[in-house]
Length: 444
Image (cartoon, rainbow, N blue to C red; front, side, top):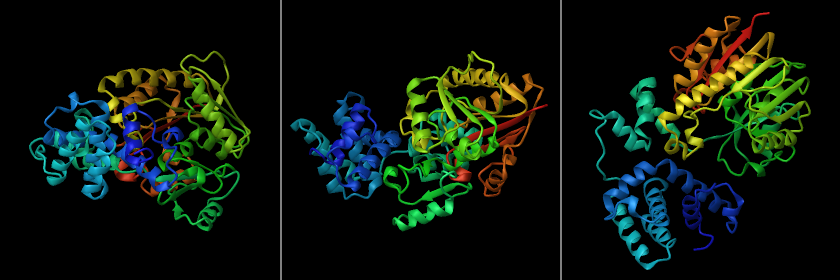
């Protein structure tokens, strides 16, 4: 089975690897096989809860007692049965073929055949009697996340958010405005046979079908960067001007850093900092590919700045629990804990305090996260504003012309997900990843 997509997927899951790494994909020359590996790994990780519910119904042994490779092979098999449309006989035989031990092969064959014959017929909690339990089982989320979503968005909004979190993320690009216009790049994509359309943001392009972005026209030349449209709105909210001095406090991997540089037309200074050297290298790689010359990157714990530089614009895109980007991070829902949030809040508050001390009079501070919790978002922001009466809240939807257009297109949410200087970008309303964006100006 060497070189079979199921074998590769089982290996990645067992070794907790990255499905995009070339070392795992060697021997898979067909792009369709590579795409199948991505689908199997991402889907199995996202749907682990529902998959394990099926395994528990049809396995004579508890999943916790199964060897890791056998368990992951069974999960890949059940995922194929439930979600891919692959014929049952092919899903069963190909998965069993990933195992080398005779006893494991016989066991897997029996479990998967039983699952295939009763596809989807497992006991589920009642939506009316136990909505948290139902959603947790149906959409494969921990109960605490489901409870949080229901409390914040209501049952219908929570179910929509969960559904979207299990969908494959769309491929959105941000065209490098210093090297090409969006219309020019859409023309290049069309000439190369790709189906694409303009996105909600002025520089955004939506590419249908996904695929290897390094094979898209203009990648090596720096004509675009992969960036969700919601993330693009954050740079627009900063609204830097040519000649500004800008600090991107938590810059890696560099998407927002490069956007700020482009909005400044390559004029002025952008300082990009991050706490880890390997993450700063990611920023430098992105900056180099996009041929941006006004960005400098350095390693720094931004909660302890050791210099007295001042900036016109500061972006604090803070580390967070990440509940707005679950569809892009299949393991995150299982690895994140409710107990992580207070630690996140403490660091977010410290980062904002550092930023406030480096903002010039008349300057703009933007705080953003890619999560949906009240504690990390409006909780942090309103407490921060309370300590800094010299900061005037300013609606981020008015950040620039492109931002205002995005607001009209429904990218930003209104009350109750808007308040003094802040708005949410909610997945179930916008179709993008989820973000919190807050903006304030320092009185001159």
